[in-house]
Image (cartoon, helix red, strand yellow):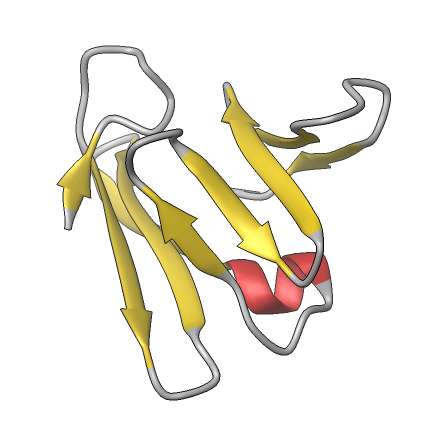
Length: 85
């Protein structure tokens, strides 16, 4: 689905496939399409996207995109750093 997960006015593509949801984010960066697999980034078996709250859910953890970082929705001190490197 196309959605503005970074809330910067530009849509990214969130793709989820499989019974154990594999979720990736595709975006344009420096005139190239880049992708990150959130299951690998979060070391999670299953990651889903909740469009209403603009968050990603892995197990019992809920994550939000802030710029190019994943930030825990419940505790802003838990960050994973940039995932589009």
